[in-house]
Image 1: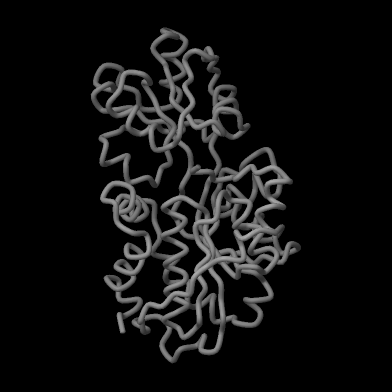
Image 2 (image 1 turned 180 degrees about the vertical axis):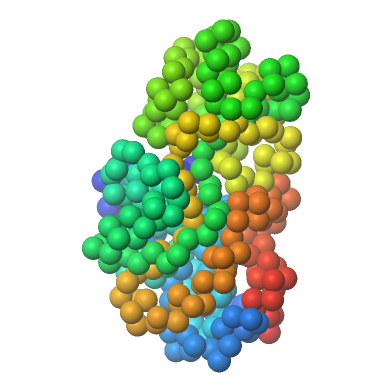
Length: 323
């Protein structure tokens, strides 16, 4: 389940946190050394745990973080690929994990319970950073990587409709209601910052028969190769957008939140190892939406292992060296 918010029930969350989910993990055993980052092994003697959510991009970012800490001298436990956002988030809050790359939109809307997103990504980061201090989580400066929601259509189908924006989609739905069929995940179909909120913002009123619910991976295939849905819910950093020749609709009324990636660190850990911030800064600065599409494509399209994708990129950029 490619869930940015991880709306787990209280019972399920309690079971996860008390069960094997956060007790398992494996040490990073890679022989890596500092490149441009980590010279002098500033984390020598540290024992750190990195985590992530259970979708490709988050796993790759978690592996990048872990490998950087490892090259800087730390012993690193890999607890990436936890189910949903809530489990990874709670791990950092409680100190069961020390760090992950999280998303400001998820924090603002889901963790902190605010209904309205903040349009300016820097301001959204700042309010998240300030509010989360009280939860024992420190947000380091953000990247420009924005993994937000979007609707996409195949270039083949769009040759007929010539849709560019969500306002164009709304106009088509009003003119020809039967034409606008949408494939979405179950959660997106019910969330205020998903399909219901989007329809309200753009004045759409799609009949239930025009909405199909399915797993995220299937949506891309259906939107690309099938006539069962004209448009599909996608994520703006997904490598399958380019690989499957999809056109992404511009959110011209700026409805969807900014899901900007930034390091979220357990504050007590950062207080003990303030060098973590300096190590991650040049990494975060390099993270962009196009780069995420490229790295995600290696996993989701080419079938590569997220750990190897992360390491190959770090070595290519000169951040670390293989030992």
